[in-house]
Image 1 (cartoon, rainbow, N blue to C red):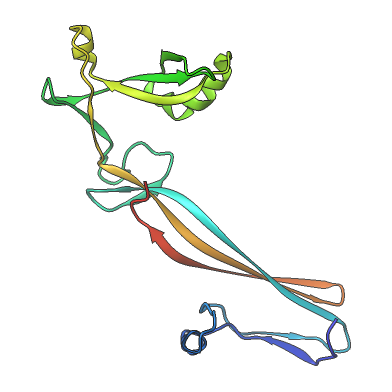
Image 2 (image 1 turned 90 degrees about the horizontal axis):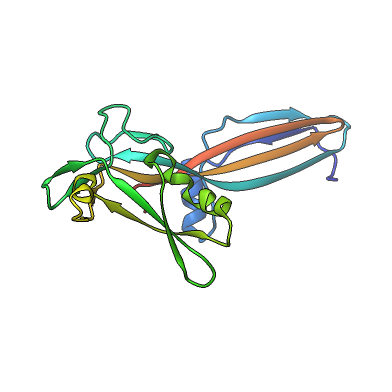
Amino acid sequence: MHEKAAQIIFHPVTEELAAKIQGAGGLAEPSNLKTLKFHIGEQDYKFHRQGKIRLDFKKFCNFCGEIFDFEAEECPSCLARIVWHCPHCDSLKSPLIETILIDGNKNEKRIWIVPSLQNWAWKIAENIGDGYSFHDVCVKCPDCEKRNEPTGLTRIDCIGDTAIEKHYTSYFLEIGSERHIILDYKIIRDLHAVR
């Protein structure tokens, strides 16, 4: 509990004040929140804050610069996607993806998983049993495979992974039986091209 007060004024840190605090060696993040006033009267009050950092994973397009949902396989703006090139055929191919599993004794097991389920290869490996876990993938040209001339494909990254780092701060003010929560967040940085 604090000393009695008539009101609490919540005044967020401005750009100028943050610069002065940082210039003096302190830590401060500016906020875009408005000034808020809370009337206390004769009631007891408590005030505290809690901060969190969150990473929102996204995809970005190397052609048009669009940032979009991490689960998407192609850019919603220009339809760019990750493509595969066969150096033997000298053309773009839809890959055959051979998933390599490994057990505790370093024994390999190779299975085919359709591309749409490849993100779940680790879970599929767990369900096979016998202690197998996901190890690696081998991406092959389907036409060369039919000719019994296995050829690995080269990945061309038309889209990539990124993350947006956000700093969330929650301020909690309890006045008597009332509880006020003030939420503030700031995008700290866009971690473009995280791999």
